[in-house]
Length: 190
Image 1 (tube, helix red, strand yellow):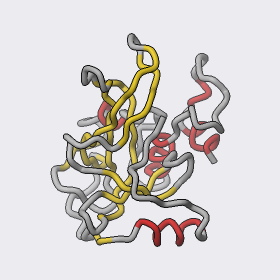
Image 2 (spheres, helix red, strand yellow):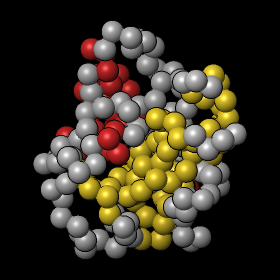
Image 3 (cartoon, rainbow, N blue to C red):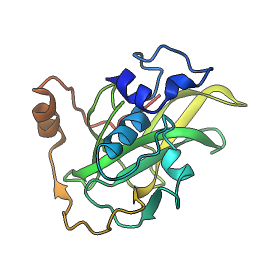
Image 4 (cartoon, rainbow, N blue to C red):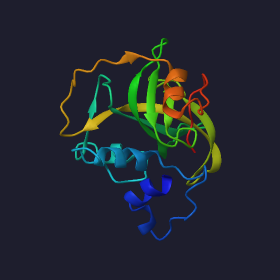
């Protein structure tokens, strides 16, 4: 499936793209989001870049202040040592909240699969910390933080569907027939 999402976003048309796509080093969260949007009447960014919604803000996407069921949630990576914003992160769809009020999102490349994961909405909280290669820094520790909620530009706001309180483990059990491991940690992407 990863190959299908990347092919859809024309990843392999770029000469420098490495052809190894089935490993954990290759992010596909944005390819999945673009593919999902394009299965509807709303246009996706058709990009494998997790920050593509930010790059297309005002053109294809609009930022919203209040979260809505199904909206796009963007996270950005920052170099831990100095807070430098990196051009990488994660993108997913909002499904609900857990009993603590944290975001429960459905997305691709969450633990290298499609599944539900828990994230913090607070821009000051770190969702995950991991090593990543950053231009001008080499391989360094980065922190992933919430960036914002977005909708396709022509999507009506306030779709009327309230965010529900959901159980992460039950959702993943239903999605994958109890094959997905859920824990209380936030997801990270590489």
